[in-house]
Amino acid sequence: MPRRSLAVAAGLTAGLVGLTVAHGASAEPSHRAPAAHVLLLSIDGLHQSDLAYYVQTHPHSALAALVGRGREFTRANTTFPSDSFPGMVAQLTGGGAGTTGVYYDDTYNRALLPAGTRDCTTAARGTEVSWTEAADRSQNPITLDAGQGLTAPALAALPTNTTAQTLADAPAVTKAILAMTPTPQSLLDPAALPVDPATCTPLYPHQYLRVNTVFDVAREHGLRTAWSDKHAAYEILNGPSGAGVQDLFTPEINSVADASGDDWTNDNALTQEYDGFKVAAVLNEIDGRDHSGTRHVGTPAVFGMNFQSVSTAQKLPKSDGLAGGYTAAGTPGPLLSRALDFVDTQVGRLEARIAADGLAGRTTVILSAKHGQAPKDPASLRRVDDGAIVDGLNAAWKAAHPGAGDLVSFSVDDDAMLLWFSDRSAAAESFAKQYLLTHSAPANTITDPKGTYSTTVPSSGLSSVSTGLAADALLKAPANDPHAPDLVGIARPGVVYTGGVKKIAEHGGDSADDRNVPLVVSGAGVRSGRSDRTVLTTQIAPTILTLLGLDPRALQAVHIEHTRSLPLH
Picture 1 (tube, one colour):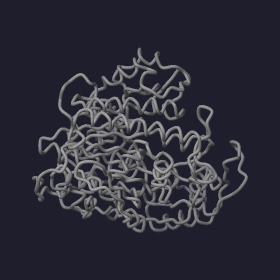
Picture 2: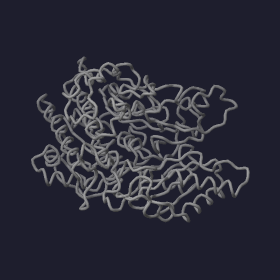
Picture 3: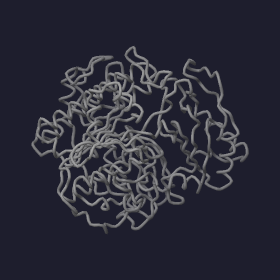
Picture 4: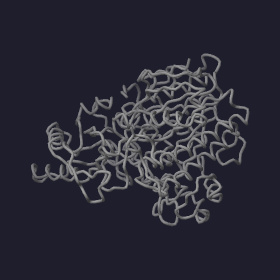
């Protein structure tokens, strides 16, 4: 994940958002392109072991067929932190968090100014950077269209607590949401975005990214691009050009989904309904139309989507009367089994449409995941209130330093701990590390009701803590990167940081359950087989360009990290 600064992006201050690599490498095709189209599917939360289990128990499934005619990499790992945002950016840039500057979807930046800042000469630097639903134009309530104004009448058609699994359940919503803009940066609220002190203007996600994307390179060669994801802030995938993805479809997953007020992640059937919107968009794109299905534009050279149904089935304790997560034997439980069946059906639909449109011989499908999910073993779950830990650390700091404010300026803790400090001295870093490693924390198990803590975890639930330059080294970040946290804590197996009992798994950490994800490349330009060599999901990006006959060295992160294309023969 290292970033070695070679140039400063136009309009941004050094060390802020924009260290990039000059376009020294030619992006001209070096040989006949093996594929004309690459479809990338991210099944968020899916482990390699889940895919292997499903293929073994469903030998005639669409997933089994995809694996059978493709090259399967059984020891693929996503990047750390294993969050959705850096995970997707890694797949489409070829770089880890230290190179891209993207460590999580909700972080802190010491060089930017708070949203709404008008006097940039006197304002203190340092602010939260939230590339989540918090950046949408629509708030209270957050809407599926992120504030575009399309879905209000149609949402009435969506039944409360739906158990439906097909697009036919809510045709009015599907039709309405497919009319979303292909340029979701227009759905981000400038007043909610951090401010760049160099220009005193709001900073958009694509301006935060330090390197270019697969979509940038494809557009430089006149190739069509499209993508579908879960927040408008995924416009970061446009890359520094701001225009890498021609057709970017981003229905908001954390929006109000039904009359009960649930969002699309609180009920797995709703998540499947939500994923169905994106499947509909990709089917339209396979047919050579835009995501709405209303314009003939040609099938994209690079396109795809992410699925959320597996992820919520892993995290929810129960949904639709079915237990979530895994059995004691480590196999998918009933809710997760249903979600895997759903994803398999949708993958089959996409593959069938590719074949029906005569594109099978010219299309490569890549299947992977932004992240895994931990823990798989329900008995190992220890839910720990991270808010209480941070409060305790701040209280101890102020007691030892009368007159001081909170030490922790910002924290993000799922099944890892990332902290940003107000005091970045070596003494402050040492104080925080010592506190965390010497304090036990109450923990809630899978059978404990809310508010009950039947056990404790040592060292705040952490197995190791890195601070300062050691944290930068762990993240492969440049020294004193203003994007990067001051402290990185690696959670003990089974620890999930949450103040409640609404989830039984999380991601973001460094365990095998967090990071060991599937990686299958199937179709044009691929020799079928299995590889047990260790690979990273960052290798997806140069592989896409190689399949399209473009030079992967045109990707700046590939140049920086020496990221190799996957061996497909």
